[in-house]
Image (cartoon, rainbow, N blue to C red; front, side):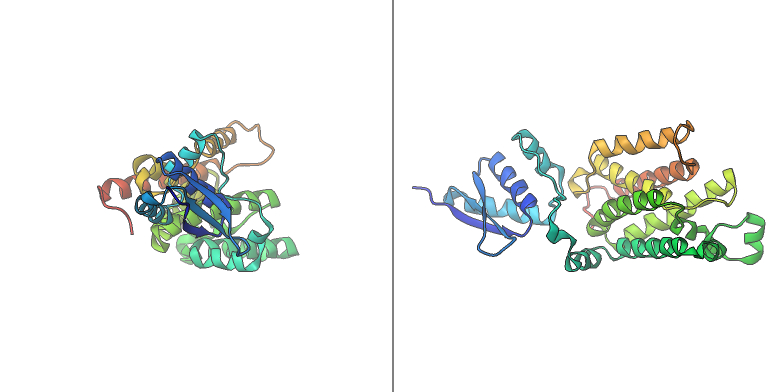
Length: 289
């Protein structure tokens, strides 16, 4: 006679259902039950004879919870599982602090962009421009203020511009940092910021700003890593890729109500894709730390 056996407790309901669906798809029938501890969910296995196989899957899930195979199992079972549920608890300061600890670079860039936008909104945009905006190349060679190759990424001109960029950066950049580490995200940020800012300055001059080039770089990086090395666990839905590519193309048509730094977007996307290709092809079959 089979007996239900508790396998693991997870403090995220969406992840608990995702894992239970995948276990069931592997002929290991599992269910999610609320724990006695508030906000915690227990996955139980119907047949305790298969508990060792189930535990192995649980350990693999804890290492790569965002691997597309888990969401695929949910889709095949007819159940959509959202990985970012809108529970009030997720907005607590403690949760934000934990996120910042897991992805310190993503959090730092978010903080800098927020600080710069707040100063601009409070009437200090002139000072922000004075110290952070790009300079004409001739002037840059004289002043040697080469930080300006990066700092235009922190300047935003409207609330929509700011929110759009920092949301995408926070979501995708933090995934890259959690899986590949601080250094990898730093490389993507620096390379894409410098490349996209230089390219935009060549095409349109120094009057531009925004994190969009970097955002397209992390998008390209996540997109190509998910394509070239799906086993590494970095995955971005195709719908997001399609939306961002359509947005990129629309920028060149002049039908949008905002001026787009199209060159920065394109060069950022290309740089992110190239970094991903170099990493994936150079690593061979090795999994990143």
